[in-house]
Length: 116
Image 1 (cartoon, rainbow, N blue to C red):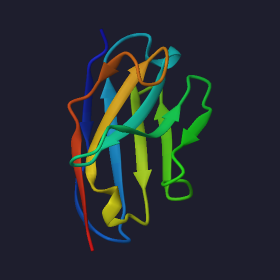
Image 2 (cartoon, rainbow, N blue to C red):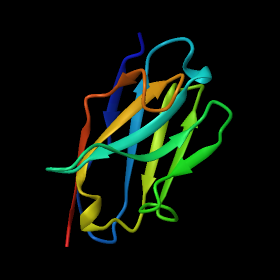
Image 3 (cartoon, one colour):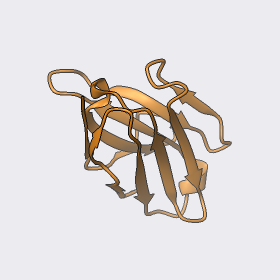
Image 4 (cartoon, rainbow, N blue to C red):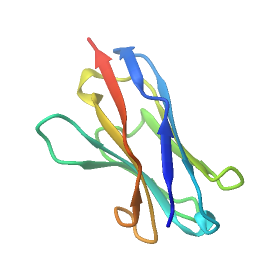
């Protein structure tokens, strides 16, 4: 079973940047899709960005052009670079690893708060 540890969340002013990291254990990390999801208070969890084992990426329309997902298979780590943050980006961000995006293992979540 893959275990995930997220880091990098925090409080930032609107327009600022944060980089989230998710370190995974497990020997087959490089074969798995990885993604970031978020859940704001009172809302359902939603996809933010996904990167496949081959490096293809997909983003939610709301973050396109502002967020970048990347992975370092040598470090078993996936990153989410978040620029031009908006108050509506405030949420708990979860890392996900699985054969299919949105399935498999989840991290414990890291809080991101963007003040206006």
